[in-house]
Length: 120
Length: 106
Image 1 (cartoon, chains in turn purple, brown):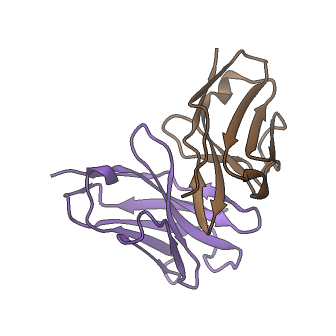
Image 2 (cartoon, rainbow over the protein chains, first blue to last red; image 1 turned 45 degrees about the horizontal axis):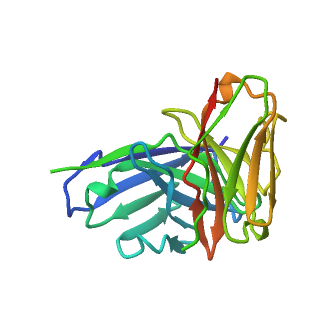
């Protein structure tokens, strides 16, 4: 059964780059019906979609974050990654990776999330 | 940018029916999903494609979507259903989430 596990920099200084990785286990990332997403949730607030990438490497980003976001995939390691540059306190959040199934049109599997705090 | 609007909170008595709405321009022309998030946990998909339940989700959960409003209905609500619920749709290749609704079972 497919499982997702995030890992990354728990504390990042303002203006630096946040980096988080999602390890995929229990299956292959190369299924054509899947894309791989990042979603974040600031403390006490709602969910915000960051972007997704296909196993072929084509990314799509939230327009509000596009200038600062890079999502990449490494199918040989069965993982995908998020980099967010020029971070501020507003980027403090739990970062979730999620599997988007094109057949169901939904994020049907989520990782447990990793907290990233932006602070000097 | 596209917006989805949910009521911040809904209260329901145990055993009664809870209704959570999600409003957006021409939302009925898009597929809508619903996610349940209990405190400290990751979101879980409860409804996809407006009214379909993933395996393992009780029949008490149902959905509809028409016009500008999608609705999540939980019949025979249990204390176990207390959680935040988020609707989600796609607009111009971007995923959009509603602000979330806290369901309280009194």
